[in-house]
Length: 185
Image (cartoon, rainbow, N blue to C red; front, side):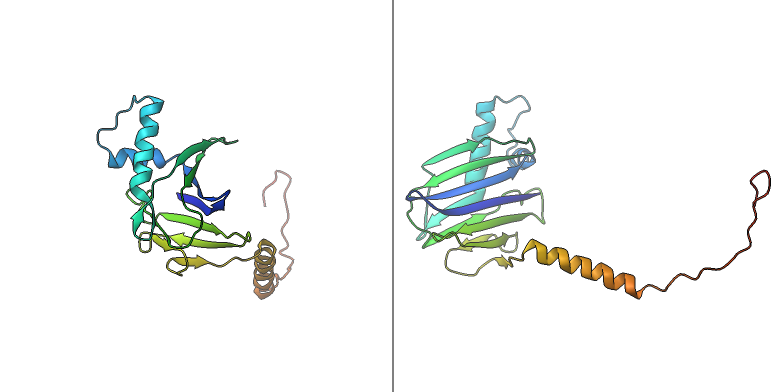
């Protein structure tokens, strides 16, 4: 399972949009032994936001920053949820993100982070258990290369074509098979 986070400045505040798979509930249950199966929606949401608060930590100049608001955004499918967080910061400068979401149930968890600059340029990073921290202005986690989709498509087609060229050509021979009246060979 993977999480996807977009971070940027929007309307004068730091905006973080987080997409979580529905298996996030398994991660919450694994860390909170008091979790019951018959929780109300309000109780479930509180446990989820506590889990997110403990595993997605935003800090600025060494101080943890709490969101001013959290809003669940509507989805047109049912296999993930999107939350929108607003923080009282006006720039990305000095922002540090530690994302350990779902590491407790998936040792090879991958959390994607997209930084949206004020000029709409984007940078993509991958946060893993080996490198769960991003610091704005530093190249700490693995930066994912941005490769145009059509380049990947043409490269894939080229590899398949080269593979087909390397295959030996089939030899057509007359095996002299005859089919009898009852269909036996």
